[in-house]
Length: 260
Image (cartoon, rainbow, N blue to C red; front, side, top):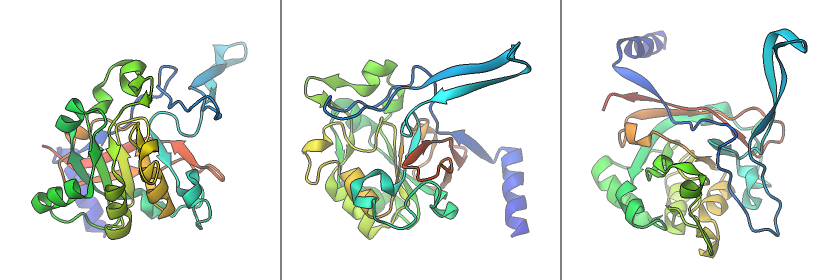
């Protein structure tokens, strides 16, 4: 074991492996998902300065932060959705920490998502990817590359129309395959949430939340830099804050990957 860790440190120091930040900056301009007006809304990020090298604190700087658990690059725990509310160890403070680290399988649908903002990844797409890259191993992260994180500004990122948001996501068949037949840790996306913008009209509605969280799986939203990862061969570390009874958490998602 010591040799394995020593080899890892050596590979990082020589540049054979590199650390890639998959996290969007978190600030006042961070887009937040919007719900129909009949539902309660998650607030955007805001902060209040406690002191900044002034009379309130002459030698230190710190802030009070206000934000919803699911703001910016964030983690969805199973308890976030009604289908996962009765599972054991389903909150941010009770999840086994070994489940935050796993190999990453990256499916690139950036071309499809550019031409079709409502693109849905199906089970057939996953099986076709596996024909080339091998079967998705259990306890891995499935990351959906859409290049959505490259869209500029909140309007372009959220992509709202009169009938609601439009962004790519998962078909129910894909969520069922990943949760029930591949036993992944969870899924990660570049969009504001793990479901497609029009996922409320699918059967079941919001399948990535409904199916994945019901199976005890996790979600990672608002990722970036997925274009720097190979289809296989990288490791993702995604550990939420240990919030008591937390349904989710902003987090720093890191990948260890070879140079492409």
